[in-house]
Amino acid sequence: MEAFAKALATTAAIPDAVKSEHNLWPSMADACTRTGNKARAIQIWKGQAVRNPADPAPHENLFWLLRETGALAAAEEQLAWLIEHQPGELRHIETAVQLASESNLHEKVLAWSERGLKLAPDSRHFLDALAHAAGALEKWELALETRRKLRRLVPGDYSVANDLLGTLLHLKKEPEAIALLEEMWTAFSKDPARALEIGRAWGWCGKPGKELEVLLAMENKGQLAGLAPASEVQARKAALYEQLQDIPAASGAIEALMELKPAQKEVHRRHLLEIAMWTQDLAFKIRQYARLAREPQEILRLAELRLEAQDFATAEADLARVSGPVADSTRAWELRLQFAYRKNDTATILAGIERRLRENLPASRRAGYHLDRAYILQDRGQREEALAAVQSSLALRPGHLPAKRLAAHLNYNAGRYGEAARLFAACEPLAPADRYLLGASLLKQGGASAAEGRRQLSDLMRAGTPEARHDDLLLAINAAEALEDRPGLLRILETLATRHQDREAKLRLARLLFDDGQEQRAETCYRSLAPGPEPDFLALLKAFDPDAARPRMNTEERLAQAYRHLDHGDWAGAMAWLP
Image (cartoon, rainbow, N blue to C red; front, side, top):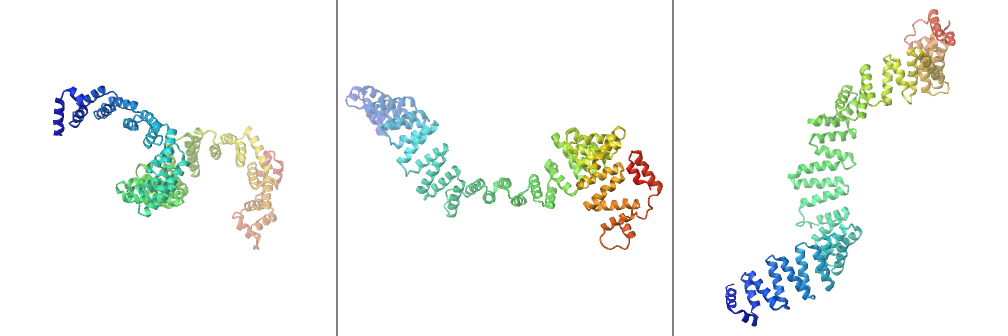
């Protein structure tokens, strides 16, 4: 450096004319550059460019000095002069491409690369720069065309093939990408690092099974050491198994990952529970939750799974382990209600329903809970409370048929026959049993409604023909009893006893016949109930009718029954009761 400084001092002392005559300016500029006086070197080269306008050397040196000092715009001007005056010099265009690439000036890279390719169509430098710039500018078809050409020019270059693959995947040209991957696997898979990259690319192409196959093969051969951490390998295996819906295998990989990364054990535990729910294998879900469930929400889910598997006792024990706010959650109460319904634990059911009714539920759900509560209260004999509950249900869902039917039944049982008749009449379609209750309600209501009730009950009785169904005959019996039509009742009971072999009908018929003094027919009915020899009729009678020892109706009682039928204009019924 000292020598250059002395040379510079000596040269500087020489007159400018002598320097020009002996062309000492380049040496002086070089000495300035070497001694760090780049500003003076730039001045000298600018002067030299003026003195020798056709000489490219000053412009080339100015370009590099200006670039080094950060004067990029001035450097570009010098480069443009060089390209213009030396159009055949590819190195200047290559430099322009490099300069634009470093500044991310993709449009300029594109323009300079296209200009260079006109001079050197197969230049890898220009093709690579063009493809990169085209991709950056989202001119993907141009990028793809350029990368395909590069691949044809250098088929054995891995980076070129890999860049083409990336472009194909971006454009979603999967068939071509897969074909390229097959070629890359054949050409480069002997290198473990490249084999691993190609395997990952299979996954990007939507072939997780192929990627997993590569990964497992390399793992078995011990080729992954140094290429990827064991934890990364297990994480990738787990992700691939999940994509392939092989949840047990994915769980195995995650558990291996838990051992490798103990600090993230809790995260992986929760992930195991999450993916367990993806499978349809209920037994697998239960095994995973039984091993891994810790939090109240997770234990609650375990109880739900065991209930689904009909393991009721264990499910209820799991539910008992749920603590904190989760124990009072909607899901927990839903589960608790299911267990209560199974055991007919009405106290728990009612508590659960009242708990749900305090929540902000849709009207239809609230109506359903009120109706459930009404049914339970009815079963417990709390009819007034049941009626209040069913009215709450109807207020929320007025047209709900089951609620209207229950309200009608409750009113009927409470002796509110007018309201019962109104509700039964509003039940469309009317169930056969409710047709009887509607008629009975109208009859018991009395007044103008009684005639309509009698008409409806009479229709039900007339339907009790020998060809009628068993259920229709039972309704006809109810109607006959409500109308106190003894002959009709005997007729229908006889039909049930003979055509349907109804045991209860035979017993009732036998008792009625016995009361009427028709002992022989009664004995025949009793004997049909107990095939085989019997000691005598009295033994049969006592076996089937504990009240058989009671006295038969006397004449006054039979006349009273006859007068009751006459009061209703039933002459045939009255005649049947006459002694």
